[in-house]
Length: 434
Image (cartoon, rainbow, N blue to C red; front, side, top):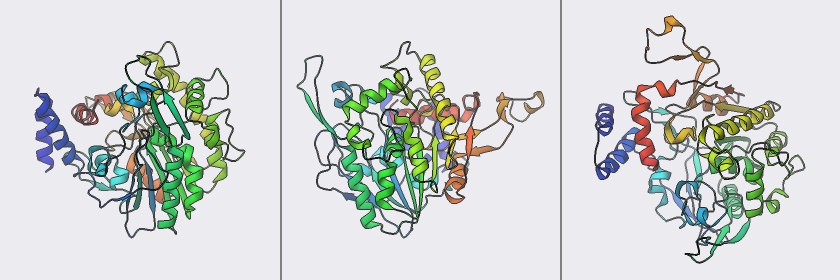
Protein backbone atom coordinates (compact mmCIF):
# COMPACT_ATOMS: atom_id res chain seq x y z
CA UNK A 1 0.00 0.00 0.00
CA UNK A 2 2.77 2.45 0.90
CA UNK A 3 4.72 1.56 -2.24
CA UNK A 4 1.59 2.25 -4.29
CA UNK A 5 1.22 5.63 -2.63
CA UNK A 6 4.81 6.59 -3.33
CA UNK A 7 4.46 5.69 -7.00
CA UNK A 8 1.20 7.63 -7.15
CA UNK A 9 2.85 10.67 -5.61
CA UNK A 10 5.54 10.59 -8.26
CA UNK A 11 2.94 10.09 -10.99
CA UNK A 12 0.99 13.16 -9.92
CA UNK A 13 4.15 15.23 -9.84
CA UNK A 14 4.16 14.93 -13.64
CA UNK A 15 1.81 17.14 -15.73
CA UNK A 16 -1.71 15.68 -16.00
CA UNK A 17 -5.13 16.87 -17.04
CA UNK A 18 -7.16 18.70 -14.38
CA UNK A 19 -9.81 15.96 -14.32
CA UNK A 20 -7.23 13.21 -13.86
CA UNK A 21 -5.41 15.27 -11.25
CA UNK A 22 -8.60 15.66 -9.23
CA UNK A 23 -9.19 11.90 -9.22
CA UNK A 24 -5.57 11.16 -8.33
CA UNK A 25 -5.46 13.75 -5.56
CA UNK A 26 -8.51 12.40 -3.76
CA UNK A 27 -7.33 8.83 -4.27
CA UNK A 28 -3.86 9.58 -2.95
CA UNK A 29 -5.16 11.49 0.06
CA UNK A 30 -7.51 8.57 0.73
CA UNK A 31 -4.54 6.20 0.85
CA UNK A 32 -2.37 8.67 2.74
CA UNK A 33 -4.81 8.93 5.63
CA UNK A 34 -5.88 5.27 5.44
CA UNK A 35 -9.30 6.21 4.13
CA UNK A 36 -9.99 8.89 6.73
CA UNK A 37 -12.59 8.07 9.34
CA UNK A 38 -15.37 5.62 8.53
CA UNK A 39 -17.24 6.11 11.79
CA UNK A 40 -20.92 5.62 12.34
CA UNK A 41 -22.17 9.17 12.82
CA UNK A 42 -25.48 10.12 14.37
CA UNK A 43 -27.03 13.27 12.93
CA UNK A 44 -28.51 15.60 15.54
CA UNK A 45 -30.91 18.45 14.83
CA UNK A 46 -32.18 20.60 17.67
CA UNK A 47 -34.96 23.22 17.71
CA UNK A 48 -33.82 26.79 17.30
CA UNK A 49 -30.44 25.98 15.75
CA UNK A 50 -29.71 27.41 12.31
CA UNK A 51 -27.10 27.81 9.63
CA UNK A 52 -26.38 31.24 8.22
CA UNK A 53 -28.91 30.84 5.40
CA UNK A 54 -31.64 29.98 7.91
CA UNK A 55 -31.64 26.23 7.23
CA UNK A 56 -31.61 23.67 10.04
CA UNK A 57 -28.24 23.31 11.76
CA UNK A 58 -26.92 19.75 12.03
CA UNK A 59 -24.11 18.37 14.13
CA UNK A 60 -22.88 14.81 14.39
CA UNK A 61 -22.01 12.39 17.19
CA UNK A 62 -19.81 9.30 17.27
CA UNK A 63 -20.25 7.08 20.34
CA UNK A 64 -17.74 4.67 21.83
CA UNK A 65 -17.21 3.02 25.21
CA UNK A 66 -14.57 5.60 26.17
CA UNK A 67 -15.08 7.87 29.20
CA UNK A 68 -13.50 10.72 27.21
CA UNK A 69 -15.08 13.21 24.81
CA UNK A 70 -13.71 15.22 21.87
CA UNK A 71 -15.75 18.36 21.20
CA UNK A 72 -14.56 19.33 17.72
CA UNK A 73 -15.38 22.71 16.20
CA UNK A 74 -14.87 22.91 12.45
CA UNK A 75 -13.12 25.82 10.77
CA UNK A 76 -13.76 27.55 7.49
CA UNK A 77 -13.42 31.32 7.33
CA UNK A 78 -15.65 34.09 8.62
CA UNK A 79 -18.00 36.71 7.21
CA UNK A 80 -19.34 40.17 7.95
CA UNK A 81 -20.64 41.46 4.57
CA UNK A 82 -22.50 40.29 1.48
CA UNK A 83 -19.48 39.00 -0.43
CA UNK A 84 -18.02 36.94 2.40
CA UNK A 85 -21.33 35.51 3.68
CA UNK A 86 -22.77 34.65 0.26
CA UNK A 87 -19.69 32.68 -0.75
CA UNK A 88 -18.66 35.15 -3.44
CA UNK A 89 -15.18 35.62 -1.94
CA UNK A 90 -14.43 31.88 -1.98
CA UNK A 91 -11.90 30.63 0.55
CA UNK A 92 -11.78 34.00 2.33
CA UNK A 93 -15.51 33.86 2.99
CA UNK A 94 -17.66 31.66 5.20
CA UNK A 95 -17.77 27.88 4.77
CA UNK A 96 -20.97 26.07 3.82
CA UNK A 97 -23.08 29.14 2.90
CA UNK A 98 -25.79 26.76 1.65
CA UNK A 99 -26.08 24.84 4.91
CA UNK A 100 -25.18 21.32 6.04
CA UNK A 101 -26.30 18.22 4.13
CA UNK A 102 -27.36 14.98 5.80
CA UNK A 103 -24.35 13.14 4.34
CA UNK A 104 -21.88 15.83 5.43
CA UNK A 105 -19.68 13.45 7.43
CA UNK A 106 -18.92 11.34 4.35
CA UNK A 107 -17.64 14.35 2.41
CA UNK A 108 -13.99 15.36 2.12
CA UNK A 109 -13.71 17.91 4.93
CA UNK A 110 -15.24 15.85 7.72
CA UNK A 111 -13.80 12.54 6.56
CA UNK A 112 -10.17 13.69 6.42
CA UNK A 113 -10.39 16.71 8.71
CA UNK A 114 -7.81 15.87 11.35
CA UNK A 115 -5.78 13.08 12.92
CA UNK A 116 -7.35 14.24 16.20
CA UNK A 117 -10.78 13.20 14.90
CA UNK A 118 -9.48 10.09 13.15
CA UNK A 119 -7.50 8.97 16.20
CA UNK A 120 -4.27 8.43 14.29
CA UNK A 121 -1.45 10.25 12.54
CA UNK A 122 -1.51 8.86 8.98
CA UNK A 123 2.24 9.13 8.50
CA UNK A 124 4.07 9.07 5.15
CA UNK A 125 4.94 6.45 2.54
CA UNK A 126 7.00 3.74 4.22
CA UNK A 127 6.03 5.02 7.66
CA UNK A 128 3.17 3.33 9.50
CA UNK A 129 0.01 4.96 10.73
CA UNK A 130 0.38 5.85 14.43
CA UNK A 131 -2.46 5.87 16.94
CA UNK A 132 -2.73 9.07 18.99
CA UNK A 133 -4.29 10.01 22.31
CA UNK A 134 -7.82 10.57 21.00
CA UNK A 135 -8.18 7.08 19.51
CA UNK A 136 -11.62 5.62 20.33
CA UNK A 137 -12.88 8.74 22.09
CA UNK A 138 -16.51 9.82 21.84
CA UNK A 139 -16.88 12.76 19.44
CA UNK A 140 -19.29 15.66 19.12
CA UNK A 141 -18.48 17.23 15.75
CA UNK A 142 -19.77 20.72 14.98
CA UNK A 143 -19.78 21.64 11.26
CA UNK A 144 -19.42 25.34 10.51
CA UNK A 145 -22.02 27.27 8.55
CA UNK A 146 -22.65 30.57 10.38
CA UNK A 147 -19.53 32.59 9.49
CA UNK A 148 -19.15 33.79 13.09
CA UNK A 149 -16.57 31.39 14.59
CA UNK A 150 -19.40 29.45 16.27
CA UNK A 151 -20.05 32.31 18.71
CA UNK A 152 -22.16 35.02 17.01
CA UNK A 153 -25.62 36.04 18.15
CA UNK A 154 -27.20 38.23 15.50
CA UNK A 155 -29.36 38.35 12.39
CA UNK A 156 -27.92 40.74 9.82
CA UNK A 157 -29.07 41.91 6.41
CA UNK A 158 -26.15 42.37 4.05
CA UNK A 159 -26.54 44.39 0.86
CA UNK A 160 -24.86 43.48 -2.41
CA UNK A 161 -22.82 46.60 -3.17
CA UNK A 162 -22.77 45.71 -6.88
CA UNK A 163 -26.56 45.89 -6.94
CA UNK A 164 -26.74 42.56 -8.74
CA UNK A 165 -28.41 40.51 -6.02
CA UNK A 166 -31.13 40.96 -3.46
CA UNK A 167 -30.09 41.68 0.15
CA UNK A 168 -28.92 38.65 2.11
CA UNK A 169 -30.48 37.89 5.50
CA UNK A 170 -27.80 36.04 7.47
CA UNK A 171 -28.18 34.21 10.77
CA UNK A 172 -25.05 34.53 12.89
CA UNK A 173 -26.40 31.89 15.27
CA UNK A 174 -23.15 30.20 16.24
CA UNK A 175 -23.61 30.82 19.97
CA UNK A 176 -27.07 29.23 20.03
CA UNK A 177 -25.80 26.24 18.05
CA UNK A 178 -22.74 25.77 20.26
CA UNK A 179 -24.68 25.97 23.53
CA UNK A 180 -27.31 23.55 22.21
CA UNK A 181 -24.62 21.05 21.23
CA UNK A 182 -22.83 21.42 24.59
CA UNK A 183 -26.07 20.82 26.50
CA UNK A 184 -26.80 17.81 24.30
CA UNK A 185 -23.31 16.47 25.07
CA UNK A 186 -23.92 16.83 28.80
CA UNK A 187 -27.21 14.93 28.58
CA UNK A 188 -25.74 12.14 26.48
CA UNK A 189 -22.29 11.93 28.10
CA UNK A 190 -23.06 12.74 31.74
CA UNK A 191 -19.77 11.53 33.26
CA UNK A 192 -16.94 12.71 31.01
CA UNK A 193 -13.48 12.11 32.42
CA UNK A 194 -11.37 14.01 29.86
CA UNK A 195 -12.95 16.67 27.66
CA UNK A 196 -10.87 18.03 24.78
CA UNK A 197 -12.39 21.12 23.19
CA UNK A 198 -10.54 21.86 19.98
CA UNK A 199 -10.91 23.24 16.50
CA UNK A 200 -8.85 24.71 13.70
CA UNK A 201 -8.89 28.16 12.08
CA UNK A 202 -12.33 29.66 12.84
CA UNK A 203 -12.91 26.59 14.99
CA UNK A 204 -9.71 27.40 16.86
CA UNK A 205 -11.04 30.88 17.61
CA UNK A 206 -14.30 29.39 18.86
CA UNK A 207 -12.36 26.94 21.02
CA UNK A 208 -11.01 29.89 23.02
CA UNK A 209 -14.12 32.08 22.72
CA UNK A 210 -16.55 29.30 23.63
CA UNK A 211 -14.53 27.21 26.08
CA UNK A 212 -16.03 28.81 29.19
CA UNK A 213 -19.58 27.96 28.08
CA UNK A 214 -18.79 24.47 26.78
CA UNK A 215 -16.68 23.55 29.81
CA UNK A 216 -19.37 24.75 32.22
CA UNK A 217 -22.12 22.85 30.40
CA UNK A 218 -20.35 19.48 30.13
CA UNK A 219 -18.48 19.71 33.48
CA UNK A 220 -15.84 16.99 32.94
CA UNK A 221 -13.44 15.69 35.54
CA UNK A 222 -10.58 17.23 33.51
CA UNK A 223 -10.72 19.86 30.79
CA UNK A 224 -8.36 20.48 27.87
CA UNK A 225 -8.39 23.35 25.36
CA UNK A 226 -6.41 23.23 22.11
CA UNK A 227 -6.77 26.24 19.82
CA UNK A 228 -5.29 25.44 16.41
CA UNK A 229 -4.52 28.56 14.40
CA UNK A 230 -7.39 30.73 15.58
CA UNK A 231 -5.57 33.04 17.99
CA UNK A 232 -7.44 35.80 19.77
CA UNK A 233 -4.66 38.35 19.92
CA UNK A 234 -4.28 41.09 22.49
CA UNK A 235 -5.89 44.36 21.31
CA UNK A 236 -6.14 46.76 24.25
CA UNK A 237 -6.54 49.99 22.26
CA UNK A 238 -7.37 51.48 18.90
CA UNK A 239 -3.76 51.30 17.72
CA UNK A 240 -3.53 47.53 18.31
CA UNK A 241 -2.96 45.57 15.12
CA UNK A 242 -5.96 43.26 15.57
CA UNK A 243 -8.33 45.90 16.95
CA UNK A 244 -10.01 46.77 13.60
CA UNK A 245 -10.93 43.11 13.03
CA UNK A 246 -12.20 42.76 16.60
CA UNK A 247 -14.33 45.90 16.28
CA UNK A 248 -15.80 44.70 12.99
CA UNK A 249 -16.88 41.28 14.24
CA UNK A 250 -17.98 42.64 17.61
CA UNK A 251 -20.54 44.77 15.78
CA UNK A 252 -21.57 42.37 13.00
CA UNK A 253 -21.98 39.35 15.26
CA UNK A 254 -23.36 41.19 18.32
CA UNK A 255 -20.61 39.72 20.48
CA UNK A 256 -21.40 41.98 23.44
CA UNK A 257 -24.57 39.94 24.01
CA UNK A 258 -22.43 36.80 24.39
CA UNK A 259 -19.32 38.11 26.09
CA UNK A 260 -21.36 39.99 28.69
CA UNK A 261 -22.07 36.51 30.11
CA UNK A 262 -18.38 35.90 30.84
CA UNK A 263 -16.77 36.52 34.25
CA UNK A 264 -15.05 39.79 35.12
CA UNK A 265 -11.61 38.38 34.25
CA UNK A 266 -12.59 39.06 30.62
CA UNK A 267 -12.79 42.60 29.22
CA UNK A 268 -14.91 43.20 26.13
CA UNK A 269 -12.60 46.14 25.33
CA UNK A 270 -9.73 43.72 24.74
CA UNK A 271 -10.85 40.41 23.28
CA UNK A 272 -7.37 39.02 23.88
CA UNK A 273 -8.22 38.86 27.58
CA UNK A 274 -10.17 35.70 26.73
CA UNK A 275 -6.84 33.90 27.23
CA UNK A 276 -6.48 35.29 30.75
CA UNK A 277 -10.08 34.45 31.53
CA UNK A 278 -9.92 30.76 30.64
CA UNK A 279 -6.55 30.36 32.38
CA UNK A 280 -7.74 31.89 35.65
CA UNK A 281 -11.27 30.47 35.66
CA UNK A 282 -10.00 26.93 35.08
CA UNK A 283 -6.58 26.80 36.77
CA UNK A 284 -6.51 22.99 36.83
CA UNK A 285 -7.28 22.61 33.13
CA UNK A 286 -4.61 22.21 30.47
CA UNK A 287 -4.82 24.93 27.80
CA UNK A 288 -2.80 25.30 24.60
CA UNK A 289 -2.33 27.27 21.39
CA UNK A 290 -0.74 25.91 18.22
CA UNK A 291 -0.15 27.60 14.88
CA UNK A 292 2.56 28.57 12.40
CA UNK A 293 4.55 31.80 12.44
CA UNK A 294 4.22 32.08 8.65
CA UNK A 295 0.44 31.54 8.59
CA UNK A 296 -0.90 33.25 5.47
CA UNK A 297 -4.58 32.49 5.81
CA UNK A 298 -5.91 33.58 9.17
CA UNK A 299 -3.38 36.40 9.08
CA UNK A 300 -5.06 37.74 5.95
CA UNK A 301 -8.40 37.91 7.80
CA UNK A 302 -6.66 39.76 10.60
CA UNK A 303 -5.04 42.50 8.55
CA UNK A 304 -5.62 42.41 4.79
CA UNK A 305 -8.83 44.44 4.81
CA UNK A 306 -7.74 46.72 7.64
CA UNK A 307 -4.04 47.56 7.25
CA UNK A 308 -1.75 49.14 4.67
CA UNK A 309 0.61 48.03 3.39
CA UNK A 310 -0.99 44.58 3.18
CA UNK A 311 1.46 42.61 1.06
CA UNK A 312 2.54 39.19 2.29
CA UNK A 313 5.70 40.38 4.01
CA UNK A 314 3.82 43.11 5.87
CA UNK A 315 1.06 40.73 6.93
CA UNK A 316 3.63 38.27 8.27
CA UNK A 317 5.31 41.11 10.20
CA UNK A 318 2.00 42.15 11.78
CA UNK A 319 1.26 38.52 12.65
CA UNK A 320 4.68 38.01 14.24
CA UNK A 321 4.23 41.11 16.39
CA UNK A 322 0.79 39.96 17.57
CA UNK A 323 2.03 36.41 18.09
CA UNK A 324 4.96 37.59 20.22
CA UNK A 325 2.54 39.52 22.41
CA UNK A 326 0.29 36.47 22.71
CA UNK A 327 3.19 34.27 23.79
CA UNK A 328 4.18 36.85 26.40
CA UNK A 329 0.61 36.77 27.71
CA UNK A 330 0.40 32.97 27.81
CA UNK A 331 3.70 32.84 29.70
CA UNK A 332 1.91 34.44 32.66
CA UNK A 333 -0.25 31.37 33.29
CA UNK A 334 1.09 28.03 34.51
CA UNK A 335 -1.61 26.02 32.72
CA UNK A 336 -1.00 27.43 29.21
CA UNK A 337 1.13 25.57 26.66
CA UNK A 338 2.05 26.61 23.14
CA UNK A 339 3.42 24.69 20.16
CA UNK A 340 4.43 27.08 17.38
CA UNK A 341 6.35 25.68 14.38
CA UNK A 342 7.68 28.16 11.83
CA UNK A 343 6.26 27.05 8.47
CA UNK A 344 4.91 24.23 6.32
CA UNK A 345 3.77 24.52 2.73
CA UNK A 346 0.48 22.73 3.42
CA UNK A 347 -2.48 25.16 3.45
CA UNK A 348 -0.24 28.26 3.46
CA UNK A 349 1.19 27.35 6.88
CA UNK A 350 -2.32 27.48 8.31
CA UNK A 351 -3.40 24.88 10.88
CA UNK A 352 -1.09 22.28 12.38
CA UNK A 353 -3.67 19.58 13.20
CA UNK A 354 -5.49 19.17 9.86
CA UNK A 355 -5.20 16.26 7.39
CA UNK A 356 -1.76 15.03 8.54
CA UNK A 357 0.86 15.76 11.17
CA UNK A 358 3.62 15.65 8.55
CA UNK A 359 5.53 18.91 8.94
CA UNK A 360 3.70 19.65 12.20
CA UNK A 361 6.74 19.47 14.43
CA UNK A 362 8.58 22.07 16.45
CA UNK A 363 12.09 22.55 17.77
CA UNK A 364 13.08 25.24 20.24
CA UNK A 365 16.62 25.40 18.82
CA UNK A 366 16.18 24.91 15.08
CA UNK A 367 19.43 26.35 13.80
CA UNK A 368 21.74 26.47 10.78
CA UNK A 369 23.78 23.29 10.59
CA UNK A 370 27.36 22.96 11.66
CA UNK A 371 29.62 21.97 8.76
CA UNK A 372 29.96 18.36 9.94
CA UNK A 373 26.18 17.83 10.05
CA UNK A 374 25.73 18.02 6.28
CA UNK A 375 26.99 14.47 5.69
CA UNK A 376 23.80 12.72 6.76
CA UNK A 377 21.34 14.99 4.91
CA UNK A 378 23.17 17.39 2.57
CA UNK A 379 19.91 18.84 1.22
CA UNK A 380 19.03 20.28 4.64
CA UNK A 381 20.72 23.45 5.88
CA UNK A 382 18.92 23.40 9.26
CA UNK A 383 19.04 20.96 12.17
CA UNK A 384 17.33 20.69 15.53
CA UNK A 385 19.84 21.25 18.32
CA UNK A 386 17.31 20.56 21.05
CA UNK A 387 14.42 18.09 21.20
CA UNK A 388 12.53 17.59 17.92
CA UNK A 389 8.90 17.34 19.09
CA UNK A 390 6.20 16.01 16.78
CA UNK A 391 2.53 16.94 17.13
CA UNK A 392 1.55 13.46 18.33
CA UNK A 393 4.19 13.65 21.08
CA UNK A 394 2.99 17.11 22.07
CA UNK A 395 -0.60 15.84 22.32
CA UNK A 396 0.45 12.84 24.40
CA UNK A 397 2.36 15.01 26.85
CA UNK A 398 -0.36 17.64 26.95
CA UNK A 399 -3.36 15.30 27.40
CA UNK A 400 -2.05 12.04 28.85
CA UNK A 401 0.82 13.56 30.82
CA UNK A 402 -0.93 16.79 31.85
CA UNK A 403 2.35 18.53 31.08
CA UNK A 404 2.92 22.15 30.14
CA UNK A 405 4.83 22.25 26.83
CA UNK A 406 6.19 25.50 25.42
CA UNK A 407 7.98 25.55 22.07
CA UNK A 408 8.28 28.67 19.92
CA UNK A 409 10.37 27.66 16.94
CA UNK A 410 12.72 30.28 15.45
CA UNK A 411 12.73 31.17 11.75
CA UNK A 412 14.12 28.36 9.60
CA UNK A 413 13.85 26.66 6.23
CA UNK A 414 13.66 23.05 7.43
CA UNK A 415 10.28 22.09 5.94
CA UNK A 416 10.93 23.97 2.70
CA UNK A 417 14.08 21.88 2.17
CA UNK A 418 12.31 18.58 2.78
CA UNK A 419 12.06 16.72 -0.54
CA UNK A 420 9.01 14.71 0.48
CA UNK A 421 7.14 17.84 1.51
CA UNK A 422 7.72 19.35 -1.93
CA UNK A 423 5.69 16.47 -3.40
CA UNK A 424 3.15 15.99 -0.62
CA UNK A 425 2.16 19.62 -0.05
CA UNK A 426 0.82 20.33 -3.58
CA UNK A 427 -1.32 17.19 -3.43
CA UNK A 428 -2.93 18.13 -0.14
CA UNK A 429 -3.30 21.75 -1.21
CA UNK A 430 -5.04 20.55 -4.36
CA UNK A 431 -7.43 18.44 -2.32
CA UNK A 432 -8.12 21.42 -0.07
CA UNK A 433 -8.90 23.53 -3.11
CA UNK A 434 -5.97 25.91 -2.99
